[in-house]
Image 1 (cartoon, rainbow, N blue to C red):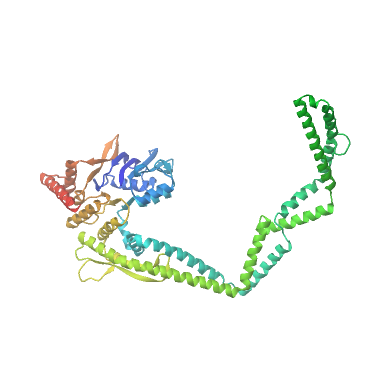
Image 2: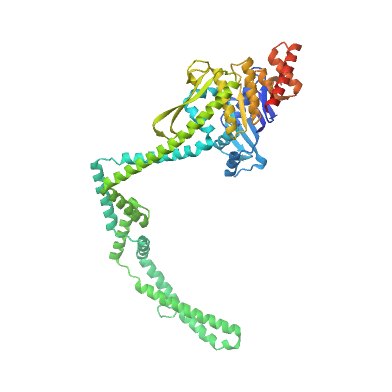
Length: 562
């Protein structure tokens, strides 16, 4: 649930901190007191509002924080996936605006705004003043039905979308395959030319590295020979003195005293090893120099071969292995083009199989939806009766699409008849704004038991209603509040009387400015606020008594319902 709200420098709110409770949290206040700022701040924290609409020009920064406590497994899994701390299910969504930029944090860790929005969808459901207008669009009806039957529809819907993607891919491949015969022949000729070009090079893996090594040696042959000659003269490889002869003399000189001491014996052995090593070095050096031949003709051949390989690399791959792999792929494509009729037949089979599989899944999804639609329609009808639609009929009409789409075969429409004898008609063509608002409340009430969202916000759900209907709406909200936390802004005493927690939003002067404050009301203060709603400017004893009776009646109704 939403445990707390902290707002700073948002429109007329300098700073406000509110702790909400479970059940029905009611917010009331005069028109223009700043109730919309509260909902706007919540929307901003959830990533769906814009700071620029609320931040005062003289404010250095603005801040909105929402504190949630939750056991929602979807939320906890999202937090785990992001490796975010979540002790005891507490989640703090914080958004700050400064210097024209906003930042978002979850439990102190900076996160993308997209993640805040994803998290918000699982934490809270806001019904704004105009959200009921979404019921005018039939495309939203399918979303409501699928949400109602989510346990059954979700896996089928996911499979349907995956199969639709496969079908679309197969369809594109099939359509692309109908290239003209001229283009096919042209492609075939070009591929065969490329294959011939690669094959005629007779490439061998690793050949380029060997050639580059030989090329470096031959290009630097003179320098290498001069350097090795100098080294050989110093070590005695040429047979004329040098290090080998001098070390041999030193070893022979030391031999006469080696037996006198262990250390001398070790030194003599070291000299013998050195003489042996330098002798081996000289032999290897001589052999290398004997084999080092500078042949301009061979160098030219190596250069031409490297130029050929590098030219193929530019066209077909960065390595010889990639060039050979490209050749194999081209050979496979040639095989396809040479047997094009068989290739087309294979594509057609794939297309037909994917279309058949998609339709089969879509039909299963449609069957599940039709069964669930009967249950949903009856639940919505019953909820509408509770909201004073006494003779209402409500059904969900299905129409099959010409072919399955990513959401299946179904186009649905909510249909309603609100008076005896009138035929069922699409919801959008019958209901007024106030009626749509109550219908949306009925749907929310039905859906509340089908999802994990713990908090619902209703912003002036009472639009266009009064009297007995208002009482029915308040009772329905009290029922929902038995299993969900509700935050509701209202102008109606009937709804406000049902409050488990009652908050007043009011303007007050402060430092030559007008600011908005939010405060929780005790029982007596709540009665006084009800009286203000009922009586307007003149609050008489009768009005106060009426407010008290409304509060007592609401308490009795809640005790009975919960």
